[in-house]
Image 1 (cartoon, rainbow, N blue to C red):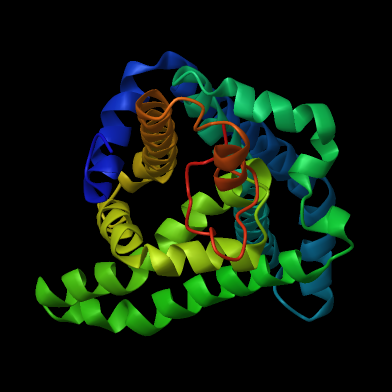
Image 2: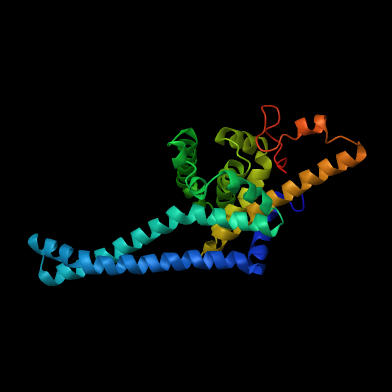
Length: 285
């Protein structure tokens, strides 16, 4: 592996800035959010403003106060709807960034091979297309677990320095697993259970990556940037792991002629890990 797992979120920052195709995708996502926000704001002022103002007047609220409160309500409603729009589509945009990094690292065939067999709608709605099955429910459980851990560990920030360190460590593992889910489920075609087993097996690496990623997201203002660069770092981590696994297999093939024949083909069963081989993270080529 080129870098320690804890360094990949930092490497992701420089890689993101130095590749315009990545930050252009982010700018496009922010532009869409901005356009949606303007649309919602205009619709609220055109439709809800008079409705809410007259409703407050009917409740015996003074006319001048009713209109002021209605304006405040419209601004708040527009902000909430815009945030919901952004965070609902955020995973899809982050997946696109992850895939773009793999393409830049010369691993685009991994993605193209999946798209030949799986439609774009299926890729975007992996949980829904499974009929709201177990995978979708498990992903929802992961999200709820992340939120719960964030809430329960928030008071640790009251302890100077040490509390923040503990906070980053406790949230690191689950955060790193979340960043890797797209790769595990959609590209490697693992089940959520297999992904979880691997994340637990490599929990030291996941915790190291997640510690740095969570720490970066605590930086005021800059955390908006790190929301994307952590995805880039996760993709670089995956790409380097793939390349390392391929190098090891190639060296083994060179040392033992014919290794990649029938015996090696069985040992490198690629897309889905077997019960004895779920930790073979990079064997997908």
